[in-house]
Every structure is written in C-alpha cells, then in structure tokens.
Length: 357
Ligand SMILES: C[S@@+](CC[C@H](N)C(=O)[O-])C[C@H]1O[C@@H](n2cnc3c(N)ncnc32)[C@H](O)[C@@H]1O
Image 1 (cartoon, rainbow, N blue to C red):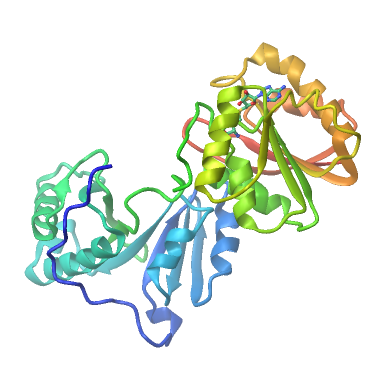
Image 2: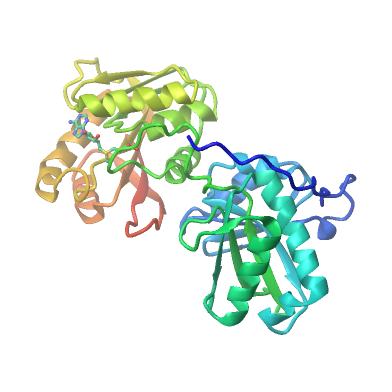
C-alpha cells in the first residue's frame, strides 16, 4: 500500500453550520445513483437526520444536509456523493476571477482535507479548452494535488447551474466511489455491484426472522451487504467453485461478519423442503459467467429447486441480465413474480425480481 504523503496544509475551516438553521441554507450535495436505484437512494438518504432531499432526477438525488459529511461516506445505495457550490458567473472563465478562484480553492481544500484525496481530475464538457486547463492547473497548484485525468481521486464536475443562474462545481467527497466497498478484498469476474446488491435487499425488505440462503454466492456481495444491514435468523451461502467460496469468505472476514459459505451445488444441497424464508440469487448472466445455452437448462431447474427450499410465506429475489429467458421460465413456473427494478450499470441492465410462492 502506498503511504499517504504527510499533510502540511493548514487545517481548513469547516463549512457546515453549527446549529441546523434553515434547511435552504444547509450545504448542498448531489448523490450519483445508478439509473433504476433513485428511489432506493432517496429512501436511504431519508433515514439521515438533518438531511432534506430537494430533487430526484435520473441518476441523481440532490439534497441539503446540515450534519457531518463523513456520514455521507457510509451511504450504500449510491455510487458517489458530491458537494455542490455555484457561482453567478456567465461562463466558466468567471471561475478564474480572483474572488471566485479564492472561494473555489478554499472550498475544495476543505473537501480534500476531509476525504484525504491525493490527486485531481476535472470532468466538464470541453474540459480540454484553455479555460478548463487553466482552472485545473490553478486548483492542482493551489491544493498540491497531481492532475490525473483518468483516475484522479478528487473528481470535479463543472457544469451550468441547475437553476440557470451561473456555473456550479461538484466535488466528490471520497477518493473512491462508494460502490467500491472497503470490505471487498477479493473480486471475481461477474461480481455484483454492491449498490445493486444493497438495492435488491432494501427493495425485498429486511426481516429479522429470515433464514437466508444465497445460492451461487460468487464473491459474496449479497451475503456481505445483507449481513451489514441488520439482524437475521440464519444465513448461508454456497457456490460450486472453490475459489468463489474462498473469495466470499475473505470478503465476509474483511467485513467482520461470520457467515457460513460452503462449496455445494445449489441444486443438490440435500437440505429438507422449506429450509429458507429468503433466497437471494444473482444468477449467471450468460456473458461473463455461464452461457446462454447453459442458462436455458439452469434457470428452470433453479426455480424448481428453490421452490422446494423456500418456506410457504418465503420469497425469492432474483437478479439477472438474461431477462427474456428468465421471464419465459418464470411464466412456466409455480412462482408468482414481480419486477422490482431495472438497474443500468455500465453495459449491463439487470432486473431485480421478487418471487413468492
Ligand atoms: C453471477 S455469479 C455470482 C456473482 C456474485 N453475486 C458476486 O457478487 O460475486 C454466479 C455464480 O454462480 C456459481 N454457480 C453456477 N452454478 C451453480 C450451482 N449449480 N450451484 C452453486 N453455484 C453455482 C458460479 O460459480 C458463480 O460464482
């Protein structure tokens, strides 16, 4: 692990108000959200004291928040959180004005000191224009952060203000996206995005009495996220691949959670009928993991066996990108199913289903 350089910069003033005051004066933030998880994000944000959601749009939730920004770094449904500030300037060039640049760099110094960012990148329409280059150089020099255009940690977005009154700068609070979890010490091809796992679990609902089964657990994303969300009666994960089992165990250990994971075929567990109240399955999607031909056999067999293992009032959550096949197989199965969400993540757009008997 590279060591963080010692910080010599003077400690910035905190910008948040000490008393909560009028919500319209609270600092403004924007959460970047995977398309399809906006309502999940709004619900999670709604649980935070002193936080006022002001707008939900595609892939973004805007809010004002009076509390400690560190709390926002523990959000689980969102990709990233940005602090937002606007300046009444007609063009980005106005941000280079003496006063504006002083305010901008002082504000960003505070964000970087809080988040521990070590490098900088700027995303803007026309980021290569002379003005954006100068702005980037000024901020980089003033904050002592190297400009790394592709993966700089202090990610800035410069864009027209939403109310049309000038230009706004968004600064990512954390060096890494929040969907890149600290517990993920082992990754595997086909690993589920942790924000999608959180979204599926939140939409399916948490019940402390649930006996939970995660067949095909892979790197254990659903197991870890569920274990971190609250109590349950019992939980076990299985995968046929020994490396996947070891990977899930490593991630669970890093998360400080004790969950049994075994190298077992999910279709031949030998367990008695109705062993589980909640079954969580991120099925092979037929591209990175599994094949379309293999899924045509796996999906019906899976639904049959999970129907046997699920208690009468139990539920089965399925996440898959192989949508047409899954919906055809579901229609011919004894399950009642409904779609909870479709999430857009990179080139994938998996659906999350909730099935009941
Ligand atoms: C899409 S991946 C799961 C990814 C996982 N959600 C994660 O975050 O890493 C599907 C997994 O199913 C496993 N698998 C396929 N058929 C199985 C079966 N019959 N029983 C148990 N595991 C199986 C594969 O080994 C693979 O790890």
